[in-house]
Image 1: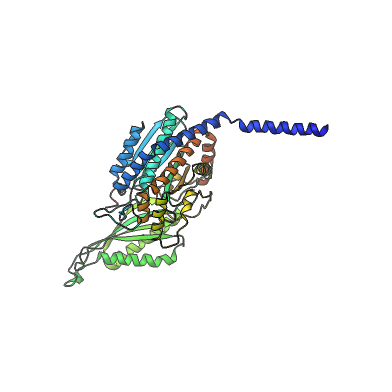
Image 2: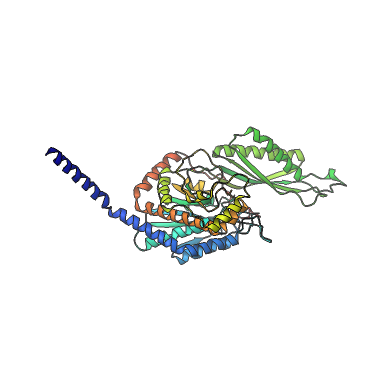
Length: 487
């Protein structure tokens, strides 16, 4: 009899537990319904968003020159009901689009600048375009479009009363070396925002929990004296000699800087004719390191090399700071929320035609490419806080408020960024399929932030602890936006 009673109690307990599991909390039901609505809306908008992305791929406008690209995004946001302020932070191609009122306030970052020297057709073989210079080798045509799409999906939920709060879409120009977001942070455009969401095109699907390299860049300009290079070279003072002397000293310095340091340069102007001693020459330098203090110290040493080059060649030197960005402050609280949403959305599946395109493209890689199926997978959340393989002005945003981002597979697995192969993928549905993954993941993450105040509270506490007592200061100083840095 006791066994029967015990068994009855156990069965009753299991029944109660099952009933509790099956009975979803009304708030959770609403969140799920909002997410399904956002996914459906983004699926419906895909063809229009694809058209926008490929139009901006065709424009391929470089930093601070993205007039048509920015205008297209502004047009789409205004048509969706956003209030849009253009020309913010003294940048003609920057904008801020806002919808809703009150808290929480969630921001989404959008980029749209291209890279010089990467014009390429949407083909799996290297094929430049006559009369065209720039190309979207970092996929920012997809970046901006996905972010605008996610913002519009959230706006629709606010408009229907399903969400309460404010959504802001930030039009961020000149990420590629121009540090556009730094000026936007400096102008206070992120004041009062609770959290920011972003993404970046890539060759895999993963939430970003690897930091970025802090960066400081400048153009070093040397002024000499012209003379006939054969008849009277003693009357001249070569500015090109000064550039080459600087470059040699910096290259010798590489042995004596921390091994994580990255220093890159190009000679943007080395003179006009071999038989004329050049009276002007210019070199454009980047200095990077995981820690911003190291960047500042190493950059100062590069300046000393430039001064030495000028002294040794009898020329004069001036330099202009072009950009400067912080490392990326990571936020695990937000990353875990985004990871769950990325896993819900899933990766990218290729058609047979796209697989053939990809396999042909992969034959141009210098290293063995991962299998094509990797684009369909979601990488597990992996936190690597003290490393980075690139720089981004999102770093400065991450020191202003809690920030989270992801990478989506918009390129065939193994594709390097800033390459003609990335441009080629971005001009096809291989790119726009990955764009949709990003747009969906950002929208679902935003829904969680609008729906659960505890996420923002915990993320903010983590942010404050990680930032500590550091008082943010732009690495590029108080200069105005370098609107002509690509000239």
